[in-house]
Every structure is written in C-alpha cells, then in structure tokens.
Amino acid sequence: MTDKPELPVVESGDTLEIESPMRVGMRIVLLLIALFPLLAPYELLLKPRWTDIVNVFFLFMALVSLGALCVSALFVWAAVAGIRSQMAFDRGRGLFTYTAWAPVMGTRTSRRPLDAIAALEVETHDWSDSAPSYSLRVVMADRQTFRSGSSWSREEVEAIRQRVASFLGLPAGKS
Image 1 (cartoon, rainbow, N blue to C red):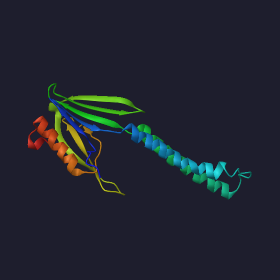
Image 2 (cartoon, rainbow, N blue to C red):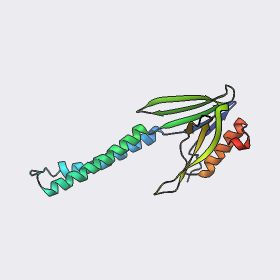
Image 3 (cartoon, rainbow, N blue to C red):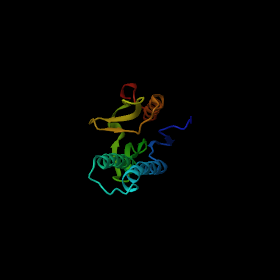
Image 4 (cartoon, one colour):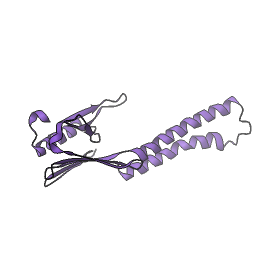
C-alpha cells in the first residue's frame, strides 16, 4: 500500500490548493477496459457467422452482446466524463476558486470571496457494495457547496479540513 495521498494538498505562500485528480493514465486504463466487453459481440455474433438470425439462440446472443456494449459504453463515459477538480484558497487576494474539468465539459471555474465560506465539512458518501468514501465540502453563506474529489480515508479528509481551517484562520465553529 502506498502513502501517496488521494487528495494532494499544495501550500505556497498565501495559497493552498487541493487537487482532485483524474489522471490521463486512469482515463486510458478505463478506455482499455472498455475494449474487453467488446469481445462478447465479436465471439457471439460475428465469429459464428449466423445464417439464421430468426431463432431464440440468436436473440439470446444478441441480448448478451447488447449488455456487453452497454458495459463498454459505461467505461468510455467514465473515461471522458470523469472530473478533475481543484480548490484554491488564496488569502492574498481573498478568493476561493473552484475549477472542474472533463473532456466532455471543458473547464468551469467559480470564484467566491473567502469570507463567504460558511463551513468546511467532511462529507460521507455511503456505498451499498463497499466502504464509504469521504470528501471535503466547502459551504458558502448562500448555501452553494463545492466538493473535492473523494478519498477512502476519513482521516485524510479530516486532516485536510483542519489544515484549510487553520490556513484561513477560521474560528472553530465555522469549520
């Protein structure tokens, strides 16, 4: 197991940044995984060279192949729609900047004053088939929220929350 954080934090001078990466390598891996389910349509529909497609066996093979195509499409969507985001807290300019990017949406940036931050919270994401994951949620005075990427470690996200609160000099009740 590696000690590399899932949510890298970079602090320099008056700026603290939280990265939520969706690396190019992960996108490539997802695209390569998307190729694997495509074997089903090839092996079940194309390779046998069906001469009679009006029978129950062909219909079953077509349904299995359709399911495989859907799984493949899901992996392709994950590769192109996975969001890479960054939270930047800039004390010098008094700005909080949230930037999100994905190939299908381009770059979206939101800038808010630091004094509009109402709370810093650790948000729990419960999953039915695995352990929960956690993310940092920045809540603004107007109730708009910004979320970091998620981590499987609550301790990591709690440490980031405390580091941001300390960096911003927020009172204990505000974080």
